[in-house]
Structure formats: structure tokens, C-alpha cells
Length: 585
Image (cartoon, rainbow, N blue to C red; front, side, top):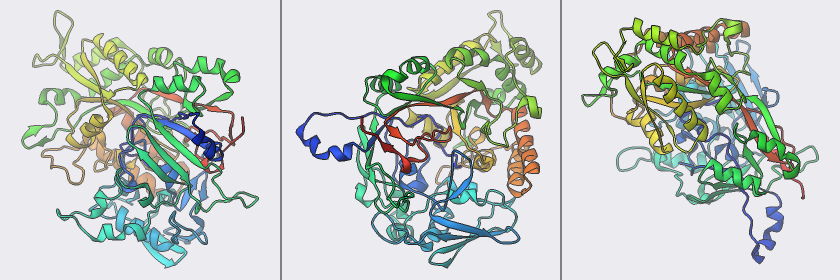
């Protein structure tokens, strides 16, 4: 599973139905009877998959890779490839594509597209894609060798054992015939035209895809419209083409409150269930003719993190030196962890609908570690322990019980998160209150999603943030978080391609150690030993606290009963969208 700057800030993408009584609508009644309508809180930022770094994005509906994951079983299943075969030494795998695969414009999809996608796009150092991070192998970060065997066969070779090789071939395949010129030709600045290709102002008919749906229309600030891709390969047991739905609509809504109101009024097909509306929705299941699904802990990690980057840009420190000294003091981070009242947060904000989180790895993954079973550290709420840690690190209190550092500076920092997310805004407000009890002033400042992404991924001008990462069953998806050179090593970010350099960035020994453990975990083929490696990585992470984990909320959604064949999973509410249909009401 990929982890990108898609911090799952938008949560589950949800639905708002559009109703109208005009006579014109009766002409499209058949299409509307198989139309599913979601809601999103902001517009997609690009229609170019390799350049995407956030949600919402269109690519789960519009593209597929060689393999896919069954979110009911967690097993790898064929997608564009009908089969694969490993070599005896396990260092290569050869995929056989399905017969007669086609792109949405009717052009053949062949091994040439697969080789092009990897060698010319993902492995292209001129293209800033997060995907390359999870495809690197071993200490040297070498990339797999991808070669065409025949029109339907592609071979992937690695130079050493690499456990996630098969799952990592699930990244989406791109159309060579539509994009090759954008790779070979440059703009006036000498950059590949690919970097400006398929922006959100591109006519939908120009976006060539291979997934179950293709883009039909986009009106910024209003909606994104998808239509069935007639060339998608799947058919059911009776030979009927899939998907069954004719259209999917994403309606842009202004807030989660608006989404909730419209669902209750009968206009939505599904909505995310938040802790503050769970009880009400459960009471209304029968009357509203919907079902509330609870998949258990969600595949993500919610945390606060301090900016540990000691570097400078253009002679200016990224973080105020006094504050940087606090943030890089382990006792300070541990004190913060002890001072946050997570049990109260779980009970009051989440209404008990979640679990305390002590690790980055998805709780349902076999590689996830826990304090009870694996001895990783948990930070129980204890204000006295927090104060003792601060005093032992040279901090002190003035006569107003304000915390000061050894140089007399008041301990005060800014905490940011995305505005409009009610749960995160409530969490930020509680953290502000909790830390005031140990003399720390927190300036909690929710900001727009766009501003948040710019600060975290570009300017690096931030002190502390409250966000979440997505996750999955395979821990190697987090390698670009834990590798010090990874594109999501957010707490000590190196410059991304095309950004101004950073002088004086320091990588701590423990950062390097966790990065090496993730490399080692990918090299180990024995599952028991592999788990031990990731447990050790989690143990170091919990000791050093680059991320202070908070609550893992249950993954819940309310879905109208007219939506047939729902196979709800915390990994994806509509992961089997090709099988969904709408019953007549």
C-alpha cells in the first residue's frame, strides 16, 4: 500500500445525491438508477496519477495495476495480470497479462505499457513521484529491472531477496501511447512535459485509463463525474461486463456537517460515521433504510509530530533554534506523550469508538506490535511523570507555573492541522488544554488543506502538526516514512526534487537504524523473522517518539441498503466497486 501526502485528512470519501424534478431528467432515468453519488470536501488536485500526493484523488476508480488486494481476505489477487510465476531463487517474477486488455480509448494494453510505466515514469529521476520510494530494494536502494518478454509477459528482477516484490506491483499502469511524447519532450525550462500533463483543467476525454470507471466531467468546487469504462476487463460468472454501475458522482460539499445533514434527509447513498453521530445513525438505521458498518480499527495512524529538522534554507533555520532544541530533546517529546490524556480523548471525542494507538502499523496487520504482547513502550497519561521528565532535561517553572527552558525562554509552540475536520479540531483543543497543565502554551491553528500540504511538503515552515497517515497490511508501504531519504520522512524532511536545498540537516542514529530495519524487513523472507524486525522498528519508534500516536478510530460508514453486494472493509469501504449495483427502491 502506498503512503503519500494523502494523510487521510478527508477520511472516507462520501456521497451526496443530486435530485431534480425537471422533465429532462426522465430521459436519463435508467442511468440515474445505477448512479452512486459520493461527497468530497475539496477538489482533486491533479489527474496525473504518478504526480498525485493527496486525497481525494480519482485513481482508485480509474486505474489498476498488475495485481490487487482482496480486502476481505488480505490476499493478493490477479488484476491486469492473469497469473505470475517466481523463479526458483525468488529473485524474479514473470507476469502474464490477460488477453485483449484495452485502454478506455480502445487501444490495446500490453507489456509495453507496463515497461513504460516503470522504466520511463516511476524510475525517472526527473519525475517527482512518491512511488519510487517503495520500489527501491536493499541498502543501495536499487530499482527492479523490468523487461518485456512478449506482448503479454513482463519480467521483474531484483538483485537480492525482496519480500514485498509481489504486492508492490499493484501500483497503477499508465498508457504509453498517450504519454510517451510527454516523457521524451521538454518544456521551455527543460523539464518533461509530463509534469504539466493531465492537470485538472484537462478535458476528461483526454484522460486515458484502465480501471472500472473513466472521467466524464469535472466542475471545480461542485462535482466530479465518472462513467462506466466499457473496456474494463472484468465480467461476472454469467459473462456480464462489470462494473454494473453506470455513473459515480463526487459532489463537493463544504463540511462534514453538510454531508451528515444531507444523508439524514435521504439524499446520500453513503456517509462516513463519526463518533459524534454514531448513536443517532444507529437509531435511524431501519427508518432510513441503511446499515452502519463497523470494520474495527482503521488502517491509519493519527499523531502529532514535532519538526526535528535542524537545517537551514538561505541561511535561515527552518525551526527557531530555541524551539528546535526543545523538539530534539527526547525527554521533552516523552513528557508531551505522557501529558496528553488519551483515555479522555477516546471517551469524550471518540465516544469510545476506537483504541489507544501505540504503533504506526495497522492493528490488523500481522506485523503490528503492541505493548502487551511485544513490549513496545506505551505512554500512559501521567502529569507528574511528564513534569519530572521536563525538569530532568533542564526545564523549569516560573512563579506563574509557566514552563521555561534553561535559557529562560517560555515554552510555546504552534500546532497545526487541517481546518474543517471536527474531530481533529476537538483533539487539538484538548491537547492545548492538556499541555497547559504542565505549563506549556500551545497556539492551536487549524489551516486550509492546501496550506497544510505546502508547509509539510515544501516550505517545511511548521513546528508541530496533527495529521494521520494511511496504512495497510504490508509494512513496507511505510518505507518512505522511515527511510531518512524517503519522501514522507516528515519529521526530518529532506528537500524533494525541485526544491531549494537545505543546509545542516542532521539525521540521528536512531533514524538511520529504523530505516535500516525497514530495508532488512523487506529482505527477509521468513515471516516470523520478518515480524521480529518490524517489531524492533516499532520499539525504537515508540522510544524515540518522532510521532506521538493518539487514537485509532474505528472505520465506520453508513450505506443505503439499496447498494448491493457491499463487502465492507476498514481498508476500503467500496473496494469492490466493480461488483456494486443499486436495487430499485
